[in-house]
Image (cartoon, rainbow, N blue to C red; front, side, top):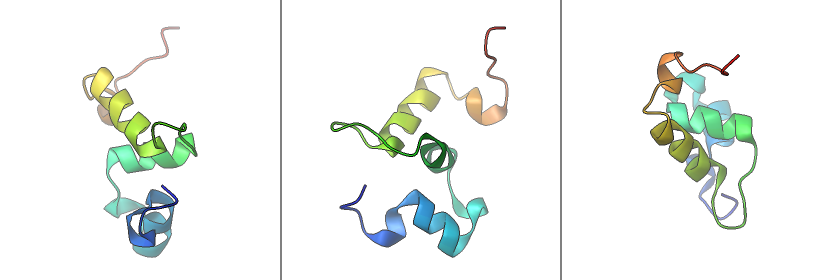
Length: 65
């Protein structure tokens, strides 16, 4: 994400525009902090949300405990 324009980076967008302007994936990417060489934190966040059928964004995902 370092190559992205500053306005497109989730953390900077949150600081400049407020958390309410971020998507669920962008908020999760901030919590993840970093990605891998192949995938950005935002890519991983989007995949996590998609893999869990969007349940995370509705607060219905459990830890299995």
